[in-house]
Length: 406
Ligand code: PLO
Image 1: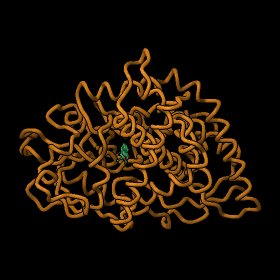
Image 2: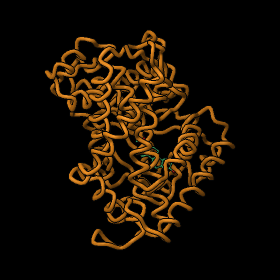
Image 3: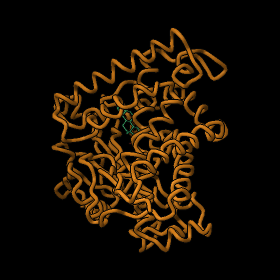
């Protein structure tokens, strides 16, 4: 299997369901072509757990032969996903634990309960906007009006990023992620984000506030201060990860439920817990299609495949969620009563498991019931077959979710 020609991942994401199935069916680990660059991807649940805890695979891009040899560089459209600043996202081992500590503390479930009233208030505000936009049965884009602004506001509060900057940040990230953005423009946007977050960190060093960026730059009982470079790397990682993915979690869950009225009825009748719905959505249609990337520091043998030293390894978490060995032969169906729903790796696994998982679950667990309570007659405004993804190779981003409110 593994010696076959690499499966080309479609950057336009024209048929995500078909592609996910093809990847899974190609075997536990298979070669893929990411916009001209060949790497491995893992689509098997057990193997993904094994390799995300294998210390021979590291996040440091300098371990990637294609990068070190200059074959992959600034002209590759996905370079911004892997050639990142030093941060908890790009470092392993003891240094990784140090860089992640304050974030893990700030995002611990107990601390998050303090954020609940704020998230509820932000949700209520956006539901008012939605009601105004969709009055008189006018179709409205649930993503644009409701799901898109919410996570940025939550992570903005957490990191101390002012509301007046959110529109600019959202616009930069939209361009950063889209494969349609010309590469010179993407590199310019990456530069703008760099300038913005450098400025942000310097402001907090000069005048610390009650936010996580400030916590990075001051010494406290949680540990010594991070360097300016480390704080910048961390804030960039957290703002990007904290907004982009949770938008999709909310949108994809609403879409799935609107397509399954009987399941939705059970949820609204209280027969199925929202927590369970959220887990099944993460498993079946999670926000991350492909997580870039880890690099082999030595040859790693997996069955009859050898990941050679210097090769790149992607985790295709959406395909992992459809693993028949874990979820049975109905793995491709959305079923809120599924007993294995929470056995997904949508937040990754191992030391780099998403530190924001509990926050994202909390946001969804507030936003989704509030949305359906306010608009019990929510419907898709177009046939599901007309919905499509944005041209974002790594993320599972619906372009829009047109709905009617009543
Ligand atoms: C975004 C650009 C930043 O400068 C660096 C960065 C760090 C964390 C990455 C994020 C980027 C992209 C989205 C990622 C996030 C971690 C989790 C999130 C990959 C590259 C996911 C899973 O989508």
